[in-house]
Length: 173
Image 1 (cartoon, rainbow, N blue to C red):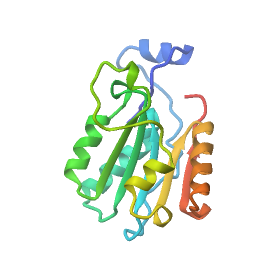
Image 2: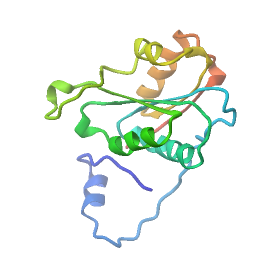
Image 3: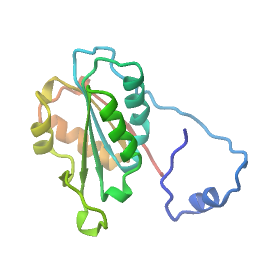
């Protein structure tokens, strides 16, 4: 699957106006994110906005194959209407008792939709409130460099071992 947030850039305008059937040459996928093979360790995914894309397949794979991994997906967006795949992720949570979706919204004051869940950014308080042991998990996060660096710094402050973090930075999306 190819996913892109449609921003007002020259590339996105051309992509958005391309007729069905337009031939594209794509490079990738080139990520190295795969689910940890140790089902005894919780998996924690930290994603924001369209950064959910590399993790959606992990969640689908775990549900389809009924993997025993405890997976906690912390998913931050500005508003519910900005959250790609939120309904699909909720359906995966219903289908897989080992999958825990923790969506959070950071700009509900700009939303036209109601929200009963978490608000604010992904941070230490939210992680500690939802995880049995913050240091025992294997962490995955991806996104723009600023997001990846802030998640890495937060996890370091929480005492998470560097070897228990896997991240990728995405530029220019």
